[in-house]
Length: 462
Image (cartoon, rainbow, N blue to C red; front, top):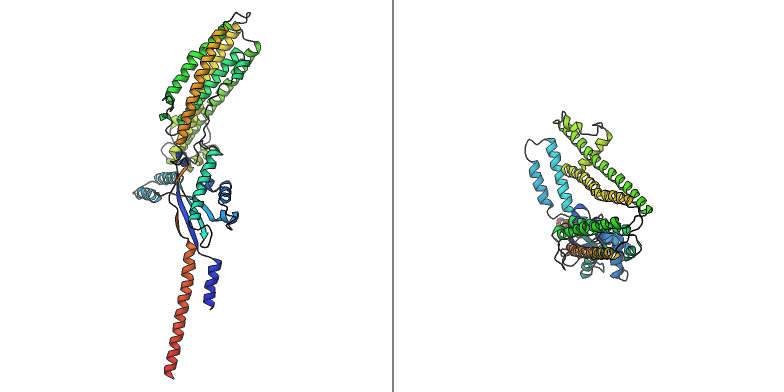
């Protein structure tokens, strides 16, 4: 009886459980970099955040079924998953099995293995719901809850967090109020800024996977067509209006001072960017010098040393670079530094156009300080009207292209994921529930049979 009681107690204290799991595949390629399409951080734990689980718990009225929110939260889990993890491990194990590998080569292979495996693990995840056998959420209800968690996460991410939204120019990029109350030169500056924003938008769209291949569904124009059209508007319309205004309007002193202040700010910002680019360049040289020194092949490379920062090769600054490079792929780290340098240089060079324009504006304004001239305002209005129409048309095309692009980051259902069929199977606790009581009962049966055999043997002796 004691053994039976122990088995019953085990069932009560550790009841059998069922697990309901599905493999989630993320449809947006940025997941490999730990990002949503709009570049905000992404983690698989986002799927089971409190906002998502609370909404699922409420929508399914689980409280009425006797499931508390805390119990529901504890029953849900998620973890990164790679269906080809075995293949990746075998590939790198075969590489490590080669003879005469140096320690540097072994370290590089191990680092590449971690990088590839990590990228694969970010593409998928395994979502699980573990419940007692007698839970009211078992069966079809449990399956629905699992899918509801995924659907709710995707809905909140898209509609509340805007993870598919990259900054794009709105159709109303031109504010009529600004045009009505501003001076001719302020209007021209406003056009230049609007054109710059549209150019930046086209770059952002092109930076996303497949962005260069997208076209405006209404006009058939691609990004390259729109970039060319934007350059033409800037070169042949905005610049012409700028020159026309410089020749026909007297610039106020406050406008000259404003342009001079803006010019100083741009030159300072440009110099900061160039200094930043030079810092990245020198950091990369220092990193390469130390790497060569460690490998024993570059200790006399005077050319690289002459370009370095002059930092102590074993100093803290360079050591931090080495530590950073060691956390991921060496090639990836070098590429990151190079990309940052190039980005800073390009940003600095992009400022040259506005700097030159402001210098021309100031020079022309200082030469044209005579009395106001008779100006044909109708000509200015024609310029302004045409520029507004052109910029509005480009903005509308970019908006439509972005909408088409966002649709490519979701699955056929318009969600951020695809999910496999939910698999329900006994959890590991079921084996404890079955095996231990069964073993105890079997042991009890053997003991009883042994006692019975002894009794029979005793009777025969009598």
